[in-house]
Length: 467
Ligand code: SF4
Image: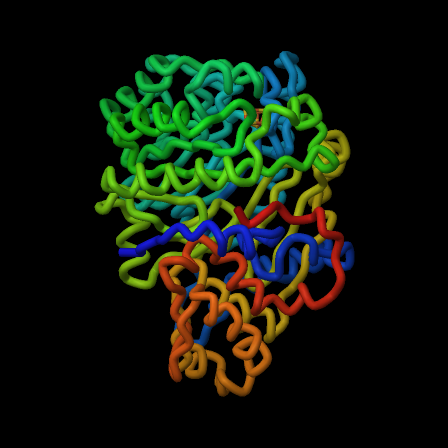
């Protein structure tokens, strides 16, 4: 079990901006020199095992970005389109199915899809019939694992989905549900333009259980306008009573220069740094004393959840969807702005939906940038994964895997960790780095020590604050 300790002074000192390490190298390193032909080479290469010890290529994971929403939440930093134009959304759905058909011939049919996630935007903008059509196409283009081996998840907007839709989603094969809540307080909801009733949301959770969903997760955000600890604890208690398997607690990053929607937030109503830390402290205390375990950055889960078990058995990974038990899969991502990860390479699709659609309709992959990792990237990724997911780095394991001497290879990094050790974020042993309970809330700051690219100057506003 991962223990976590709140230390206000250290959070203030180390809580500056930093990457979230959903990939290493991180997305700002992607470049336009990586395009369609590089991706095709990697995709075909991925059909033979990359690691010597494997006797088969990894299974596949699919991510589909469905960007449409009916109303704008002012805090939103996602790639989304606010519309009520059903025709436009249908055209996009046709295009994403064409995109699936561009990717699928590159992957051996023997490789099963073990994980599928529909994210957005609001995937439930689409009707059950439209989602059914999409699922049929995906099942035609790829080989799906049997239901007991397939994690099939969908983000659900409780404002537009009635509980009776859950049965239809289960019939389409979905077995995991992710519900956006953020905060139940009406004043906060008004300030971010996301009015959502507690009763409707909880009814969805009940419906998910009644229809055999294996896991339900709830997203919350702290640091929103008009939030106070007294009011936020009421939201936390309501969510805890409903017992979702996972709770994600994100820090609101106010970056209106990057996300236009955030300009609609009245900055004078945002909690200041001290109030935000108070919200975080209260949330951690409330969740942990209610039986939720801290997984790592922003994520909590009940003790019998797969993420907790994966963390205990060193099988937890981090990828674009946060923490995952399936990061060994090659990730084929479809849709505008989507990021995929195949055979030590990353690719990102065009963000603009018109340009994205034009490329696909022309029969071209809409990839605009990416990168292929070099040997140093791969070692560093392993170290960063170990820090973010297990809270420790075992030198011998890395040495055996990569044929390096850890203390020599990472001499500078180990030196750079000494002040963090003095501050109590990590403990440096002769054979390992251990993240302390205090360091657990500052995993990004610890991981940044191993990020070679941060030594190169980069615009500060690219990253949100660590806390
Ligand atoms: S937060 Fe979600 S539902 Fe709201 S606008 Fe952004 S993508 Fe759409």
